[in-house]
Image 1 (cartoon, rainbow, N blue to C red):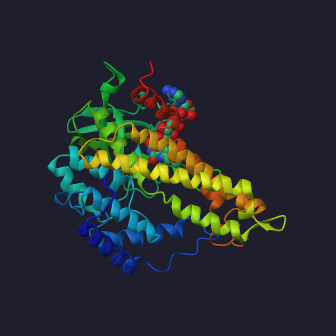
Image 2 (cartoon, protein in one colour):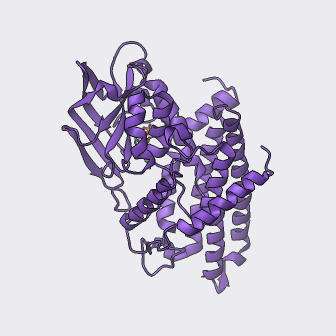
Image 3 (cartoon, protein in one colour):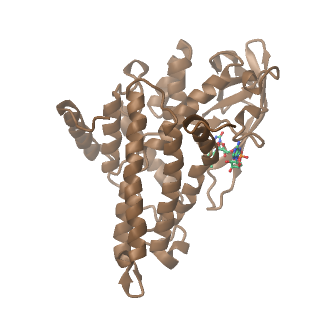
Length: 390
Ligand SMILES: Cc1cc2nc3c(=O)[nH]c(=O)nc-3n(C[C@H](O)[C@H](O)[C@H](O)COP(=O)(O)OP(=O)(O)OC[C@H]3O[C@@H](n4cnc5c(N)ncnc54)[C@H](O)[C@@H]3O)c2cc1C
């Protein structure tokens, strides 16, 4: 990748920075002592502001109602949002089902579903995992039987993130039991308010309820809500997972995190000295700074492939494994920086810089599980990069 910036791209960078600084809602809520709801409101406000500028769907082509940025512009856009401390747009609608619909959807589906996603008016959730189907997703059992111009859906999904906030769910369902298990799957768009859809919260270790079980009990879904052909949903499932990895890979600002830990390591003391003066601590920090640079260049390699019109190859698996493990190591360092304060949980007595480190530590554990666990990614690397036998 050529890292030099053209004058046009430089002008675009300036435009984005100026606009974000002028329009980012100023009053970020003081998150101490809160459990995320206010933050949701803040993020909703920010996403709607971006949507008015038509920059929320920043990876979508203009003909589909997106910003129409080219790949270098997308990179610059993400860089500038992070630099300004603004949330990069992401979500099941904007980053996952939207791109799938404009790639494979019918004209009706594009017209019906894309505008409310780009305007942040309809929120989506993902119905892939089931109680006995996670890594082995193709073994899923939720059934959809054809009945005239409708499917009748019965079954259960699990780990449905933010199902409480979503008005739509995209779900993989079994429409045939013949042939290979991948061959009998279809991809449906289901209105969460349809009779027979219900959700049940799964309480997390941090007390939050971000996950849900989702039940389908004789749910009527119009056939026109199927994306792609019947029994060819596995192709959709894989394409969507590609979009999911781009989403999860693009917006973790590790440089900012390292800067924050350095600042905290100057404030926190051990045996009368700032933590930052400890040689072992500095050693770990320096290694992680170097690893962060390596990760950035792997991201550029991934983006270069996309810019050349190729699908991101196995480097997206390398990126996923390395990013998840680096984030986990970083938050372990953050916990060590805080010492006994790391046992505090959403504690209003902690500084604004420190308060979210214990929460970040638990959240980053999930990074090696979702979007294909790190073990599954290592299987892909073993097969496609190292050519090892099964
Ligand atoms: C934060 C978070 C959000 C999520 N949100 C959603 C969502 O919104 N919608 C949704 O559908 N799902 C969601 N999931 C579920 C996620 O996709 C699954 O957890 C994931 O696919 C793993 O499946 P599993 O939990 O059933 O674990 P399993 O597949 O049972 O795996 C258990 C362990 O065995 C290992 N393993 C399994 N197979 C192999 C193999 N072949 N080789 C080596 N090791 C293997 C795994 O790596 C793992 O360590 C979310 C998960 C998390 C953590």
